[in-house]
Length: 166
Ligand code: ADP
Image (cartoon, rainbow, N blue to C red; front, top):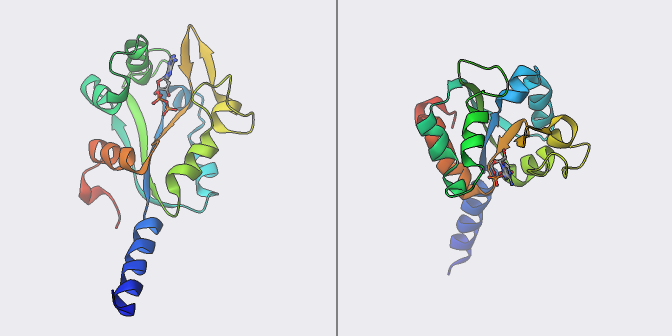
C-alpha cells in the first residue's frame, strides 16, 4: 500500500470514529419528574454534538422493535407498559428522543447513565441518582444505545434521515 493510501485510510477511520452516533431516549418516569433538562445537561457536558431531537409518540409496535433484544424475557410486557407511560401518568405515550454524535459517543453516554438496574448503578450516574425499582419495574429514566451497531439500528427506527443533521 502506498503512503498516501495509508494516510487516506487513516483519515477515513478517524472520520468514522469522530462521527459515532448514539440514540438517547428520555423515558416516561424521567419526563414525569421533569428531569429532561438535567439529563440533557449531563449529555451536553460530555462534549458530544446533538444531531437530532424530537418529542415522539411511542407505539407498541415501535417499542417491540426497539426492544427486540428482550424477546422472550419475562419482563418484556412490563417494560413495554412502562415505556408507554403506564406507571408514570404519561397518557399520550410521549418519549423524548435524541441523536448525539462524537468520539466514543456510545461508551461515553453509557458511562454517564450507569448500569441498567438503578439499585446497582453508581450514585453519581443518571440511573443511580434518579432511577428506582417500583412495583417490580425498573424505572431507569433513560435509554442509550449499547453498541455503535445497535445505535444505527435504533436511530433508523426513531428518525427519518432528513431529521438528522450531517
Ligand atoms: P439497557 O437499557 O441498560 O440497555 P437492556 O437492553 O438489557 O438494558 O434492557 C432494556 C430495559 O429493560 C432496561 O432499561 C430496563 O428498563 C428493562 N430491564 C432490563 N433488565 C431487566 C430485569 N432483569 N428486570 C426488569 N426489567 C429489566
